[in-house]
Length: 214
Ligand SMILES: N[C@@H](CCC(=O)N[C@@H](CS)C(=O)NCC(=O)O)C(=O)O
Image (tube, rainbow, N blue to C red; front, side, top):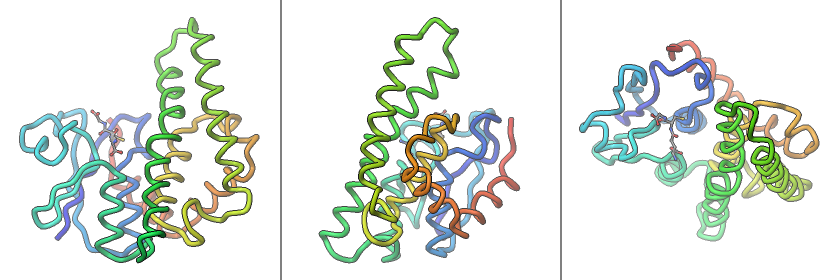
């Protein structure tokens, strides 16, 4: 059975937002059987030679699917979609659009949101110019996303795909202050449309019941 390595314990600020949720959400959408291997972050479960075989950067999520070991949430989601034939089109052109938007979520949208979040965690108030630059970067990305989503329900194709799981999770976990996203109504309604899916609701509920803060 597919083993999904996710947090069993993680710090309070990260709990409810971690990237194992992307894989758990995809597995729930696809109704694939799996077993969660719970990893305790404060106890350094990720920092072992055995775990580095799955995840070279000592991070969550990773999977072991009958000996196929994979890390990187986007790679795992594309693998699961292709394995199940779900949440990805069966033709090369459609698949290319999904892969494109998986990369966009990871490489174009997540970096500015994450940079701003990390600055806000760590700044002592003396980084005004740096923060203004990051807010400008976030605005530029959200402006372009707003334009793209103006007449679309989903990001890559007419239907919900694994690219939507990544993009919606990036928007959900990367934006702590709703004022940042409020000027972009198409992005807000896109994110909320994805997060209204029953599979996401089941996923976050089960995660919150299982994962401890510490
Ligand atoms: N690019 C990776 C990033 C994974 C990542 O940042 N995981 C975080 C949790 S959300 C982690 O394991 N952090 C623990 C650490 O780095 O010690 C992916 O998308 O899977």
